[in-house]
Image: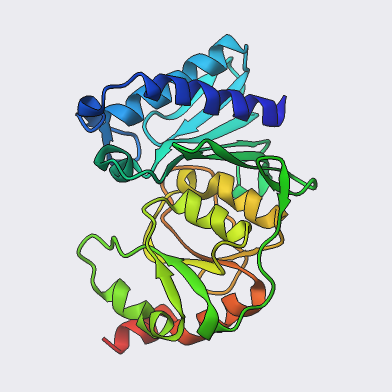
Length: 273
């Protein structure tokens, strides 16, 4: 039921938001469990996902950016990790680059994820993976790029630092070294594009990402042969909850290590500002 369940959630969300008038997508409805403002498109998508789980007789738990952690059927696991809409600002501004991100885990940590799906919207292209079985885009196997010289690299990075300009200065040496830069507005898609080789690596040093943003893409990256590292150089693994704030770099290991050597430790970076 693993990947088929996730595909059903994506289908249900797509159908629900397709019926939502453009004028109401950006309406503020509440503040979600993650602390961020919930827009109407987020609420409608999440409600569709919950209905889908209930109708399919799912017995487990749901961790969602808006609802937080809820039990459906009374069991702790399996755990569905959901970002109903990743890239909400793009969606409500009419920028056709946002996604549904949903993963299934049999344990409490990122490394316990066993299946994942990220649907690019509005194209409905589907990135997917099951642990040990590879990563796919619309059924075709994908792999991260082999080693690319930093000077020729196409990098994904997010500059939405919410007033903390120091975080931009930290990565300036990297940005000046690469050939192309993309700021996409959806971390899930940026990471999946890295898994498929469209980007050479993806870097986020803002300490703003939540596990719901990256859970699905994490497994897709790993199954595509990419490294997913914390900025101290260790392999990224974290609890599946909404409290952690995450920084990461993902891509082929050699280029990731080269980038990490350029930005150095956080203390060293801050001392240079």
